[in-house]
Image (cartoon, rainbow, N blue to C red; front, top):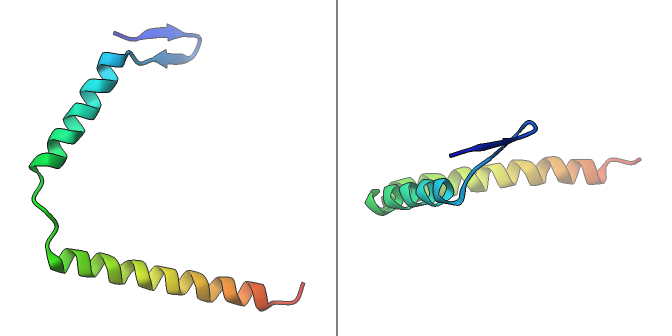
Length: 64
């Protein structure tokens, strides 16, 4: 299935399609995220963004 060219392994197209097909199948079978999961993910994202902007703001205010 794989050809070796130097140190790089060539992945054939059918291998790639099989991998993406398997991922799509897993995604189709997964249950939709619950409201609690979405809320926790959103709050975690907001907290990370706030801390990033706080640090970035401090870096921008610091004299060079």
